[in-house]
Amino acid sequence: GRSNIVGMPVALLLNKRDATVTICHSATKDMEACVREADIVIAACGQAGLIKGSWLKPGAAVIDVGTNPVNDPTKKSGFKLVGDVEYEGARAVAGAITPVPGGVGPMTITMLLHNTVAGAQRAFGGEGLPVGARELLDAQGGGAGGKSKKGLLAGDGPVVVVGALVCGVVVRELAGLVARAVGGRKKSSK
Image (cartoon, rainbow, N blue to C red; front, side, top):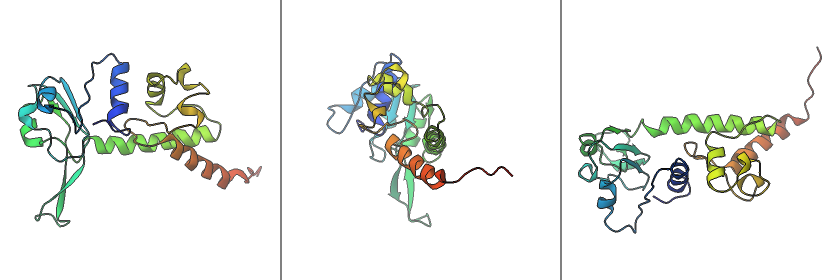
């Protein structure tokens, strides 16, 4: 996909690592042919089972970011979560594949928490950027290792961190709320 949450940031990060990136989306003609050429398929299109196993190049690595509810009367909830890749068909062809649920999701939560803590540390005078932010800023021209006063860190747009799926604006707001909440407290010398 070409979303600002997954597709474009992943494409920028891979391009920064000298990967040749093809972005497919809803208007892509002959998506099957594009997928068949890929060594790595990162599916984030929001359509359950769109990518078929028969489309994959044998041995391709498949990272399925999708989480789509589909009806399943055998489940208490009445649905189950599936990815954007038809898992059973893809598993037979792929060299490696992430499951849904249980693949990318737990890493997303881990990175969200990591980057929330990093944002709070910065708000209290700590150092560091969220994981992946420096590479993304460099890829988008933020340059200077993210120290530029222009670009994403200057507050004129969200910092999208791949894996965290969280905007820097939200982290800054959260950190600001925490700072205001504890700002009036003085450390006791007892």
